[in-house]
Length: 97
Image 1: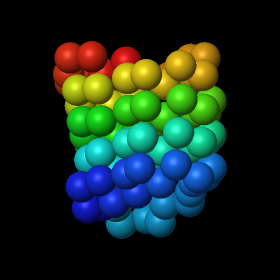
Image 2: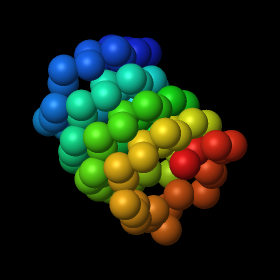
Image 3: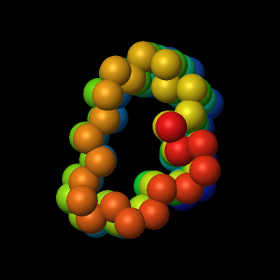
Image 4: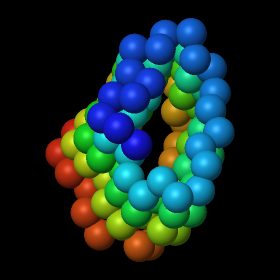
């Protein structure tokens, strides 16, 4: 998905992503009201700042297809109580959480 595609959509509360997407990069940055998101099994890369500053994010499911999580991907997601990282993830960049 394009860099920052939904960035700064401050009223966005949820989204459904279709199959065929392989990477996310700053896609939902600063979507302050985003609460949950299911990432499709086709995604292999969660790039930098994808969910940065998504303060109301409480649920994200990272599929087993993901191999890398970029810097600041989940930084400042202060409502996210926990997150399961699949065994396939081999790279987690700085300040990802």
